[in-house]
Structures are given as structure tokens and as C-alpha cells.
Length: 217
Image 1 (cartoon, rainbow, N blue to C red):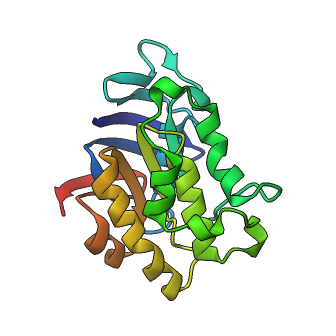
Image 2 (image 1 turned 90 degrees about the vertical axis):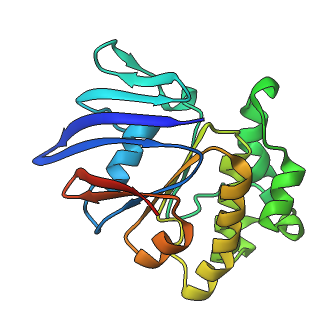
């Protein structure tokens, strides 16, 4: 499964131009804060609309300005993990995990709850409410919820940014295991060289809204 993007857009006076390809594994969008990395994820997810270009995952076109294709976010099968967990506070961990899973047609599911719970080490948390989880635990649940919707592409927008160093070190091995087991493209945004060194298969460098280079890590 692969992912291709070739887009340009304007956000006020800020211009964005991004062309790159991602294969299974972690492709890191790397650059300073304010470089436009999160905006690129938002274009892919369908939260924002590019001015022109094309976005496709595994051959399916999500956006094509020439063909006038622009799938709504709910039809893109793109998982999105934000800096904060954004769990449903009124639902248990189990219900949060099953939210996207239950909305996904059985024929398109590739992720099963029991396996993802085991991969993320959250079996002991299933009955808890999000209020009673640490920041690292909340983020692991958020990752599990996104994956259980069986996305074709996973977006991770600085998922460790709100965590202290101990919690970051707690979550990194889980992200590495997901990289090795999921076999889907993961786009991971960071401005930290340490995360690039540990996680990246491919590095896409972003500066002032533009992709300036792509290399194997």
C-alpha cells in the first residue's frame, strides 16, 4: 500500500507546496514549528482543501482538482492522531476503542480489538474512564481507537508533544511495533531530530510551507 501527494495551496499569505510519496512504514515530515507540516496532514485528511493537485492512497483518489474529486473526511479511511488524545470523556476506554471499529464495515476491517489492545498494552485500562488515565495512557488509547477503524493511512501530528520525557519513552516502543506490524503508510510530524532518528524510514523535509527534500533515514 502506498500514498502519493502532489498539492499546492494558499492559507492567507502562506503558500504550501508538497510533493512526495510514502510507502508502508513511517514517513516523517520534519521541519521547524510553523513550517506547514500540520496543514499538509489536514489537506490529506480532508479537513482543508488544496488549491490544486492530487492525493491518492493505494490507487484510490482522495482529491484531484482536475477531475473534481474531493472525498469528505469520513470516506477517506484516514486515521488521525493529534497532539492531545481527544478521547470521548463520557465513554470507557473499551467504548472509545470500539467507536471507530463499530462504524467500519466488517469487510474492510484488518485490525481486531484483542490484538491492538495487546500491542498497545492497555488491557488493564479497558474499564476506566479517560479522566483516570495518565497522558501516556490516553495517547495509547487514542492510537488504538484510530487503528481500529482500519485506516489505509495513519496521520500522527506530534503525538508526543504534550507528554513529559518519561511518557514519551513509554510510548515510542508502541509506535515502533505498530510500524512493524501494520504495513500501512504512517505520516509522522515532528520537529525533533531525536524522533526522526528513532522512528523514521523516510524523512520528508519541510520548510516555509514547501517540501524541500526526501531521503531514506
